[in-house]
Length: 464
Image (cartoon, rainbow, N blue to C red; front, top):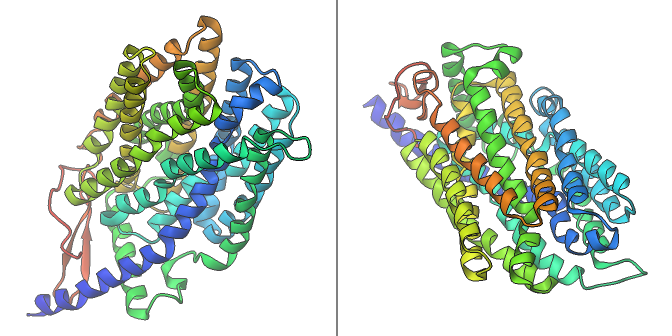
């Protein structure tokens, strides 16, 4: 009887709290990431004019686009730790203002060295934002809800590419005060980050216990749930910061994410130029064609996260998409100059790319928590984002050497296949693929049980 009463009492609180948190946080974090990603990748559309105006070779542009990720790599872990040990709200607000200002300054460059430096500093400014938000979501969402939360946040990636394409169509045509459209594209798209950075100081809340916008019963429930999950993980595995980043599973995850980012950034940066080569179209036509794959990526990301949370399986949900990326990109080269077939293949590759990250980012939180989780997530993301340097640079270098983009695309094919194999090599014996199970105790309290070091636990979360 007590169990039944506890369930009847608890379930409405769980639903109300989860929905209220999602309504409060998901749209705002989504908007922040849209501005983040637009400021990061709008250079790919600017390149359609910038490389000609500034006389940049493909190798110069590829290096400048990729050097962003060197600064991003170096400062990733210390900045992400600030979210855990200082304040997510303050850190995110400061970094938004910083990168917005630097993104605007990118539109004023006049030489290759200026391009390299501003991109490097932009990487430093953005280093902790993405892994910091992933850590921040663990402060608010149970494991069972986390893939959907990550998907709602990362949905900003294809959306930012769509919006970036739409803005580029308009802004690349203007010429105000003697400045070309590519300069206005870079300058104007950095300004919203500065504004939202100021709003962040007042809007975000660091942890549920501080959330005055949550009713007391919902605030107490989510705080207790997250504490029980943390205790369950801590009972199974205790790692120092240094041990966590050297954990074999963390190293495999970092390698797999390197392969993913190599494809994601490499394709994102060079797709407009590749489509321009294939189609021979004008700037407007190329931008519109390049936006099609990002539109199709949105439902793929949502479906992947929904099914991964429903089945509570993560490894195969991450491995299959990254393998499909390699296959689809190989097909894009077989399509040759047939625009419809090539764009279709690129669209399948993009759909697969964005089906990957939501289940992937649920994997490290299976066995790590607190500062160790923050350090490991930052480490995985920082090592992975070296692929953001490798992808653009290698494609640019190979295209200069060979006169085509084919060799660069086949480099992406190889990294996609390797990434899938690395995810599949994760051992379920040392890191469970499925979520911790929760059960309702005799007094209506939820007891967490993490299957973290043994066999996979397929039971469902009954506290939903």
